Image 1 (cartoon, helix red, strand yellow):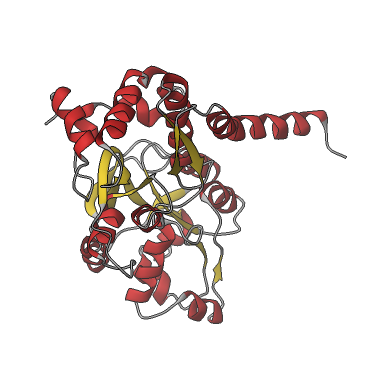
Image 2 (cartoon, rainbow, N blue to C red; image 1 turned 180 degrees about the vertical axis):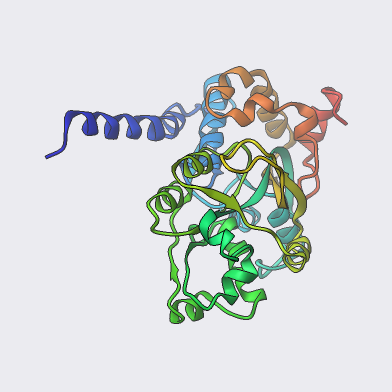
Length: 330
C-alpha cells in the first residue's frame, strides 16, 4: 500500500514535469502552426521548448509552436528533411548534418541557425573507489579484465552517440563488452543518477551544462569523481566538431578542481524555407519574455543576444541576422 506522502510526491512530480509541455501545446495561437522538435520532454530541450512555445503562443496571433519529442542527434536531419519546422540540437551535429558527415547519411544544406543557448561538456562520472583502483578513463574501462557496470546513456541521444564512437574507437562494441560480462544499461540522466547512487552502475556519462541537477544529486549520494579524457579521445571528438571545455570545480561534491573535457553548444535550428519575419518575431518575443522564461529554465536567465549570435555550426538565418543586428550583437 502506498503512503499518502508517496502518492503526493508522485502526483507533484507528474505536475511539475508534465504541465509545462501540456500548457504550451494547449495554448496554441490562432495563426499558422509550426512543430518544435525537442529532446525528451522532461530534459533540457523539452523544458526550453515548452517555455518558448508558451510565450510565443500567448504573445502573437501570426503563428504558434507545438512541442514534439525528438533528440539532439536526430533533429537536424528531421528539420532539414521537412519533418519539423524548428528544433533544438547541438552545434557539432548541426555542422555535420549541413555537410553530410557521420552520423548523417546525406547533407542538409538548407539548415540555418536561430540562436545558441548553452554550452555542454561531456561529463564522465565514476565511482571513486574504482577510479582509485586504476579505472581512470574510457581506455581503462575497455581494458579492464574485471567486468564493469556502466551506463553510456539513453540510446539515440548525443551522449550515447559519443559513447558508441569511443567504444568503436577502442576496437570493441556494446555487444562484445556484454559478452565479456560487462553490465550496460541505457537510462536517461535521472535514471543514471539514481542507478549510480544505488550502486547498480559504477560509471555514467552525460553531455550537459553546469550545474547539472542529476549530477549534483549523484555526487551527494555517493563518492564520485570525473574520469580523465585521454588525448586520443579528445582528437576523436575534435574530429566530430566538439570543442575543448572545462567542468568547473566546486559544483559536484568531491570535485574541487576544474575537469577538462570536450563539449558543444545547444542551438535552435530551422531551414531556409522558414520566412525571415517568423524567425525575427520568434526572437523578438523570446527576448521580451526572458524573465518569464527564466522561471522555466535557468538557461534563459543567462541568455542575451550576444550569446544567441555565437557559433551554431550552420549559417545564421536571415531573420536571426536582422534581430541580432538591431540588438547590437552583430
